[in-house]
Amino acid sequence: MKTQELKEAITLEEALPRHIAIIMDGNGRWAKERSLPRAAGHMEGINSVREVTRVCGEIGVEYLTLYTFSAENWNRPPKEVSALMTLLMSTLRVEVKKLHKNNVKLTTIGAIEELSKDARKEIEEGIKLTKNNTGLNLILALSYGSRQEILNAIKEIAHEVHKGAILPESITMDTVMSHFYTAGVPDPDLLIRTGGEFRLSNFLLWQIAYSEIYVYPSYWPSFREKELLETVHEFQLRERRFGNVG
Image (cartoon, rainbow, N blue to C red; front, top):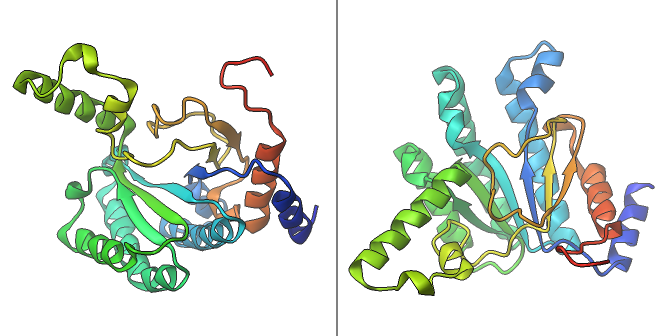
């Protein structure tokens, strides 16, 4: 279907994903295939971020979580890490005003304290500017690792038990989730991974227990409006049973 036809088909269905999470994979490989530096792939990937964010807002998605920089990404060559941090800051500096104009709320998850002082400043200013917006909640996962998130939650709960603030037998699923970075955010309905890889890469391991998963074969810089709409439409055609009989 054409883009407009997809939009019309999506609006006719009731099962719109409330929360979409995306593993944006393949920037480097996209650049390599074009004999370009890896940084060029990351820069082109920003155009996909901009377009996907816009479309999610237009069709009524409430939350969009983007795996922007993983805890493991710190192990990449220092030159690439530095380039990614510079790109993050320059992008936020330009895009936050546009997000604010479009009523998008910016938030983050992850070990933000591990980022540079300048990067944290840009993020904090963007969060402050957009905190009262009521449209799409754009969540950037930065220095994020799901195993670390779960470990931190266990430590915090253990500390509360040690203090006598809670009893072990009173710990519930909600107790655990309240200690996650994503506390208060609904679990993703749809997880998209670009680049054709079939792995989760330490991303939202608890939260995606019942997410519908879609693996897009091409790289992130090639994932734009039509690809997003096709994925959302496929999601709407799936039957979500959550362990029950259909």
